Amino acid sequence: MPGDTTQDRQQRLTRVPIIPRTVGVIGVGGIGFYVAQGCALAGVKRIVIFDSDHVDTTNLNRLPYPPEWIGRPKIEAFEEYIAKVLPKTGEFKLDTHEAINDEEDMWPLDDCEFIFITADSGKARNMITAYCNSKEIPYINVGYDGNHISLYKRMFSSRGDEGDTYTVTPSWAAPTMVIAGMAMYWMAYPITSQNPFSMNILDTLGMQEEHTCPECGTHTVNPWELDNHVIFCPMCRKGHHTEEKFMQHLKIICPDCRRGFCIKRVSDAHAKFKCACGYKSCIKDELTKHISEGVRGCKEVAVTTSDDEEDD
Image (tube, rainbow, N blue to C red):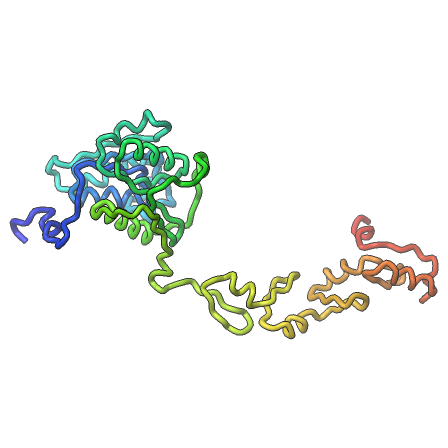
């Protein structure tokens, strides 16, 4: 409406969010981009961002950058993008920095009232978390893997160097936006709990991925339940709902040990003791008995094994 300010509707909330003047965002990739953008739109006056990465083709399924920006530094791309979004009042400032290699690089964060840690490296997360704790700066670690998202106030792992390298994870736009918004809520409405928050978005929406029994059509959201529900053939990995159907599937039966097979090649390899006449067995004593009885004139005929034949 005419006369309204940018934050007018925000100030009409029953519980007005607490918006710091300065925040830090470590990493402006999938999550960090939406966190930094949201903070800027919510009225944060200064944002300190760190990122040494460049825009990649794979980023464009969740970041609103044009293809011609591929290869640009992410901090440069975000700086140009946000300049087109915010009103040019001169009240907003973006403070950009590249990689954090050690504690000496983190001094720009000292003035921050809240820090979002969205770095890819576990080592970097731990280093920044320790720095925030030492400076008593409120912070939140934010991450996701596919449709699983997590927010927590603790170290990335019990081993400081774990996760030092970048890991490729399944990614798309929805979870990055969801968790960025949740992280902003954490900042704007401080909670006292130190417990980590973790959830699978599909579980929460009742849209769990279902796995189906190939024989009876039983559905389950836990694939390991099918492992107990279905008998899988160790040779072809086809699943069978009942033991009877599994036994019917094993059409080739070894006459000596009664073991079943569904693949002739595997059955032939199993009967590794062979006679030149074509007789074969999985039991060496049976072949010895076959030769000693002189069946089909096999007495004293040289015996070969499947391994010998393969070598020839």
